Length: 183
Image (tube, rainbow, N blue to C red):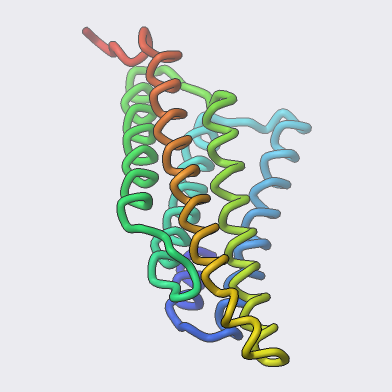
């Protein structure tokens, strides 16, 4: 779904953003139910433990990168770099650990980080669509308050980026012994 989402969010129109948002919702729902079914039926595999978080990171990274260019939002590039860098570092550590036969599961900080990132995307992509829909019916007043969406998105993404860093630090602290692989 991610390549299609990338194309949809590359085109700055209400229709493509709405279709992209619908696809993002579908991707997050299928990911949730896939994990739930795997846990309920005890179908958890090492492959799934490694690939599911990787697919999630690719999806969320794609959306964050595309949100940088959305004129309705303020999403500084540095926040997205920080978020993606943390994701690459954690994925790299997990891969290295797996090569040593060690599986590092997600912790509560990583799960909270993932929820915050998903909530940010759902809320702000949804608000962009609502703003553009409202502009059709009441163009003047909506554009007068566009700054609210700009600055709430800026504050929210900075919070998400800072929590993402915090979750990465906690990940390192909680797995310090595991991270000393082979040394």
